[in-house]
Length: 278
Image 1 (cartoon, rainbow, N blue to C red):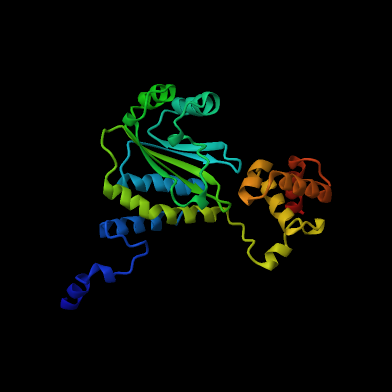
Image 2: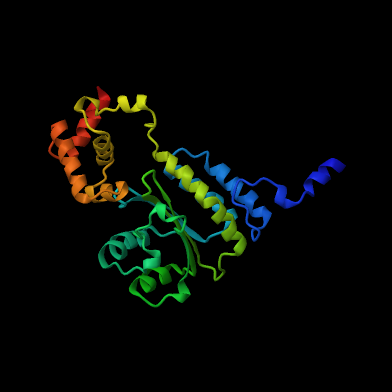
């Protein structure tokens, strides 16, 4: 028993941490962040991961409302999951405020042009009382009664955000330092878990040889772009994701179409499906 007590009383600087050690963070936050990551790591899809995350976050940083938007490869909303939200208001947000008038503060724009390579600065807390009046604020935020919103996103392997999360409070109680510390510690690791949902197992020469495009003699770059085209990504986003000029992207696409004997992205997708069913 004395030995156990002695171990428990070790200087906390000697304790190994799975997260960056910060003097300003209470040690209990590391435990909470670890448990959050551990539970979420058992999910197998972006949706199940997000649903589990929202459930667990009720204890980590309690919210009154929450919503997750799922985006496709072109960063267009493909679905959502919400807690305590009115579906009609969500439809209004997607159909009107987001796509028509664009009257959304840049700090809370779903299409915030964030890049994973810019560092983990894609977590943002908004105090709505500090923002000036706008149609969006009056017609959406005020109707929902939101006081604070905490938004963050998760990326795919290309560094493009595919899930956007918002934790909202209708209580006039800001997120505490402890709540911020817990989630801030966990977010980078949660993002890595999410990225792995998009892994397709092509990290060895053997796998590359077995690509469905082998018979068309595509170059490595052409194969990469062909795969992205078949995921539904457009040329502009492929150019951005691969950091190549749009003219170069179009040249590669032209070569891919010529080699595979197709004339459109849709035909290429059909060809890939046929290849996989042979």
